[in-house]
Image (cartoon, rainbow, N blue to C red):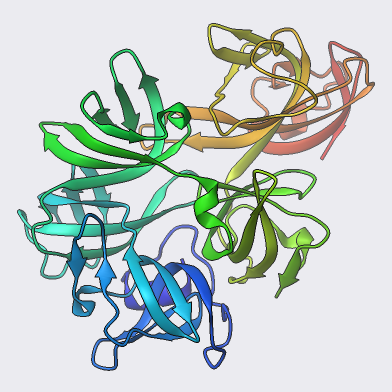
Length: 421
């Protein structure tokens, strides 16, 4: 996270964190919608900073949901909020925690809420049985960093947000990370959009290790129209025309996008940025991107695979290597689920590894590729003298053994040669 989070929230080095940056001048007034971390809060003066803008609350309500409000004194640095401001005066402020629930266990810096165990060095005054709001940010390498844990009154319901996986529409269940969700009795906002990869906010009750949902809200890109949001770039495509922010928002970048404290070429996974965006033609478009770190953040791993697609019973692979497809995967050049099998494709995406060591390749873009091109570009791990199932006839992969590399190779349709990074 930014230096604010490092200094005032977490008394340890956070993986994937960068520098500070200004995020706008504190002397500059702000009118519009902001989505980001609280910083420099003064409860006595009723002021705080979001995305670098100094804002005045003047008694504006602090809303959560369903009529639940908190006092301004319960807002702390690091909490994520969505603010509508007029001339730097807050009109509405909505809390956006990653999860809300009861602390069921504490072991040193480790604590468990809603069956999810996390690490945070600032658990001062937090005890088992307390209700808390937890704010996290997903990092570019697939890990999650806790940036705020705040004790709150008994809310009466729990919340967990994150991407859907292992959706079973027949059993009305899915997972968020390792947490099982039963939505058989839930009101689902836009159920047609509920799919693997969709970002959801789930509210309900914990029953054992299962969250029994009463409500499931599916994130809609329209919600971010004309919004300035801060976060971590979790993926960038090779052509620098798309980024993914916070592991959830796909944002288009074009020649009209303005850049502050950096250039388009500086876009990279792991960078902390502030993005001003609008919703145009069913997509989020970045109108301005400001770099908020020094470029030293730990980056995630991106991959590029080229080859003949195998797609059967929902399973997608190239040369026997499985690649996940979800509702966030973008198909280009007329490709879709019906014609993907046997097509020659170029796939870009993210490599993730969970705490148990399980590896995942997640497709973000899939486009057609020329099967008979005599050159090929591949990015990924070289293991056993191969990359993405291809061997080199001239042994040019040998020097990259055990490394993650981005290679240009000659290609005869079966074997590689003259591979160089």
